[in-house]
Image (tube, rainbow, N blue to C red; front, side, top):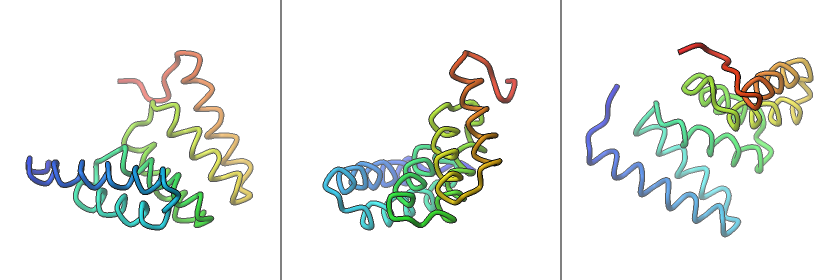
Length: 117
């Protein structure tokens, strides 16, 4: 699904505003804006990753894991996405899943690929 240039501009403005909220410690406001970003563009990796990390800060771990999984689905070879997902699993007590995600991050950190292009 592709978005219009206008939707992309709106998404980017929301994302920038959310990042500003996050920097000011207004995490709940940032989460709401990150949610709007991914509603506008369900394939927006940066939005899903940021949403997951912000939800983790609010201790909304289950929802954070869902967002983290979306990020790794969209970019399976992204080191930060797997590292973040591992942190989410640890916080939820899902140690086996955390170790799997950490293993993928380790592969990527050594220059490997989780999914071949």
